Image (cartoon, rainbow, N blue to C red; front, side):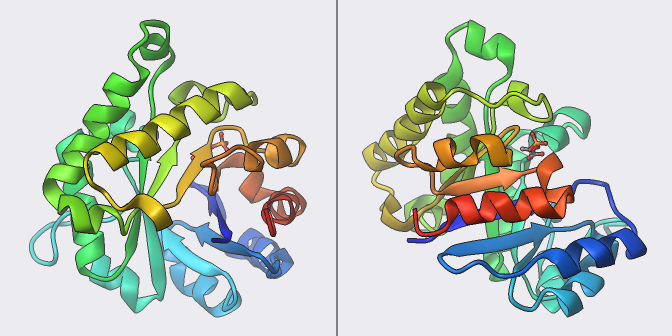
Length: 244
Ligand code: PEP
């Protein structure tokens, strides 16, 4: 299975700077590339990146109707989005999304044929308290409860330790290996056929640490924030993931 490298632009960009960035992204063989852009730029990215998958950074839990400001999964499909990030730690912390909401968003995405990239991960305080898998287990349980065992195998997971996001310092190889292995085991003991379920790592992935991270067992790709806004860096990370 090829690795998936997903760029999360967050709330950055503009028509002119996007054009430069998107034009610099070229497909790399042996890796699945994805850019998750802000909603208003989906159309621009759709036209300019036909060979790179397109995604969004959030989605409504509702299919349609009187939900001012929301964007449905079916709307994302209209722009050829095949992936959507749900439950990013910024949405959990800043917009008060709880585990149940994240789970309903994942279900809404799947129902419309969009693959949710469900983000899980602990804060530093939770890690220091030895609660990493308690926290991640609760995040995963909520999704499993809503999706069920069969659909759970069709999502992508992203392990993003909150303390490593935008920090300039990723989790260590040992920490990443430990959590990815524990997530795989968690899924297996609950009967999820996770053979093709990808678990991405996210948190300060850069060209300098990408190869080391991609060499870790159960790391099936990366969710990249800051470095996805620098064309050379994103391309270097994609090349590091190719044929691994
Ligand atoms: C992210 O926002 O998902 C992320 C991992 O950010 P960064 O790569 O900047 O740490």
